Length: 257
Ligand code: ADE
Image 1 (spheres, helix red, strand yellow):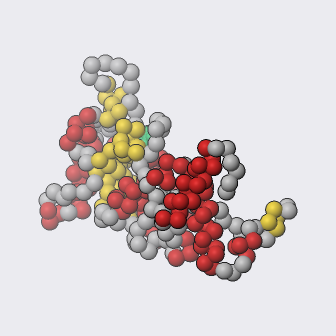
Image 2 (spheres, protein in one colour; image 1 turned 180 degrees about the vertical axis):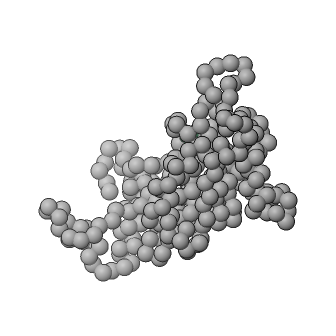
Image 3 (cartoon, protein in one colour; image 1 turned 60 degrees about the vertical axis):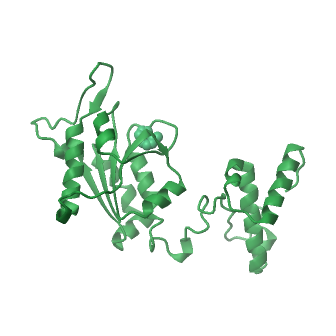
């Protein structure tokens, strides 16, 4: 996969993409990330990227021209044989976008090329939204200083889904949200720490029992913390019955776990 990120603050991307799983994916050539400074696509002496809002009001608005030129230049370089006319997701990170989740990440991981545009200041010229961008994504109902952190979050979540990025030892299969459930509790050595013991079943060596315990814990944890996720999770008949029983005992104040 190739990811091109347009930003006014390219230095912000230096740390997060050069560590751990992401860097390994880059080293293995499973992903290539290019950071572009929107300012490099201006033509005036002051390299102007923003301007006052028509109609007045506080704050500056990112100009359409450098953003259009950046995207067009990336596409022309990447797809010369099509004259740069290639359909691919051009995503604006904005609090007004559709709310990012694992399902959207899975959808985006199926594309071979993404272009991410990081907004800043009070906004971006609406013509970018109308005529250049194909998708708008928000990472949560809060306002960041800009789209940079959101672009990093999106890229991180998408890249770890690419085939070959995670080894079998840290597979995404059991991740919270991949299964539609939150993850079960994990323990490592020592067996007893400050008097707190690892649950007996995990030491039993009985894989079927361990799998059943983990599944139950995941369901229980989801019910306690994010009950709304259970409506969409794929549960077996017995598991649905268990959830029904637990919900009932919750509502009647019972302590049934
Ligand atoms: N830019 C500012 N806030 C944002 C958010 N919550 N998600 C994506 N981009 C943003």
